[in-house]
Length: 417
Ligand code: DSN
Image (cartoon, rainbow, N blue to C red):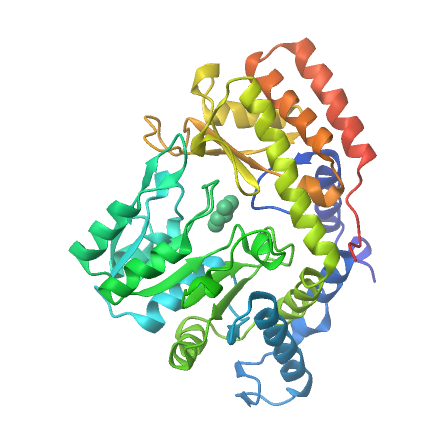
């Protein structure tokens, strides 16, 4: 019996979401569209199976296929990121990070990470998280938000002052590429372990357009699998070469933090890793960067303030205070014409996170749909039009029509390879 026959209420809401995704231009930089193959694997019978443990060492019977599956997923992940060990079980990025902290640190140990308002992530020590109650987080910042350069002198100074056990490079709202070698150099000076949280740029690393922190000397890399990597919602931990770290991380994921792995998601991760190993994926991530640059050019022409002065990755962070609208208003105005972005705090923000001064946007999803550089430039023009003329019904109608034409021209594809 089909979903719609059995449960019309849920079938209807899923169809409505499908329609929304088709009809809107998705610019949230952490979102993307998966292939039909990833979706099929994600919806497979592996959702029925319990498999606590790891291949060859499970606590339940009937594991001949889960073991094959998880081994393939781990091998593909290692190949993709040039790692010795991979744990494909984390349910998402936050538990992946927590697992690393718990595997390698003791309560009260110090972690040096990027400040949230300068682009870091909640799990890097925001006071609202459980990790912040367990560990002592110290934060470094950008040296200059006009260029996005990180303050490596401050990083070194903080490292020597606080002697962190772990140094994290990684971010969720930062548009430049960190100098991973500098991180490693500083970590060596103070005997810290290095972890790169590459949730946003994992696809760019996999496709070879951004540096791989593991190849620059980082010990560990964590990531989500659903952003630029274009897989199912999930997490992944990669270990460069240290087997002791790998064993401790495995124990922290299971039984430390999680129970049975979601084998259906692991199947979908494996499919996505295969896609990301293809030459098509390399072209895709190149296009993601070019499209972001095309948007940057337009914002520059209109003198829109970009945190970091522009972008070297897939995302842009705009300070929109000069338009006289807040981040929340901008998000709502754009959503009303079919353009989806997210409001975001910016460095030195005088507004609160629930209604900040910035919006964050990016090109992974539009690029998956096949948008070209000129299409992305046009979308940036549409965004500027709306921000310059808030609540102007004529402009709104013009943009709505164009959004509809573009989303019809570029349906969400089902295959990429
Ligand atoms: N929520 C993710 C993002 O949008 O960047 C990070 O966890």
